[in-house]
Image (cartoon, rainbow, N blue to C red; front, side, top):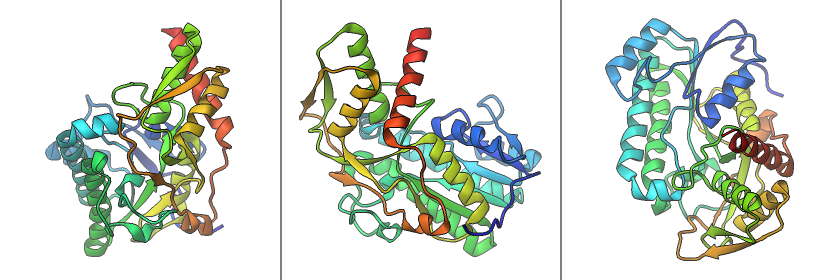
Amino acid sequence: MTEVIFPLEGKRVLVAGHKGMAGSAIVHRLGREKCEILTADREDVDMGRQGEVEDWLGALKPDAIFLAAAKVGGIQANNTRPAEFLYDNLAIETNVIHSAKQAGVKKLLFLGSSCIYPREAPQPIPEEALLTGPLEPTNEAYAVAKIAGIKLCQAYRRQYGCDFISAMPTNLYGLGDRYDLANGHVVAALIMKVHAARTAGAPAVEVWGTGTPRREFLFTEDLADGLVFLMKHYSGESHLNLGTGIDMTIHELAEAIGRAAGWSGRFVYDRSKPDGMPRKVMDVSRLTALGWRARTPFEEGIKAAYNWYAAKATEG
């Protein structure tokens, strides 16, 4: 394993976006690092307003920032609300990254997304594929915003010497996901549908698209561990892919969720709905070479995610 170049012990570490799926997992993981964990609610600061962010970070003076705050959603949300996904994400990242420099933050880690890569990127997708071809149209606005965040971190590193780095997580799932059929991601949406079918004794669940696209999925606890690893061990201009390097079809995903729920019905595919990219799995060899890899087997992670949702649904 590579040496620790930025120890977190004793440091003031801000998790921007701590209530989201990624942010909450980072907060949980940082509990093992003997650092002071800082968070902020919307009542404390509107990250879309530059003046507020500058004043807030200037007063808070964190040593490090995990920039996980973002507007996120599934294919339907991205496809129908592109202005929101572009503007809101640009505002958040530009305000926080610029204000971090102004406040003298020693290190910042920006979370991107694997959707930054071209629709026809080589598979598995290497970091070098960025900006080599057209993006997937259904989430182009979100991707453009995330690409801008990567480039902003690189520019501040080049011009000002800021130790700002970027990580590109693959599709995430886990505890605390956004369970919203209209705006959520594929794993959360399928967990909701399967749980509803199991509860009602329904024989079938509808799945958007053909079921043939291939996707890679990373458990949020692994995501957080990988991000903390990068904060401590990596300093470089290139963004790094963060995932498992293993993919499956949407049909295989649905079947796995059915098994996790103990539901044995069938899946019906609505081919009028978009599939998105035909395949998306990332080349994680650079991260592996640094000494980190995901630990959670998919069946174990999806069972934990389903059980978490089922418990919350039962509560209310």
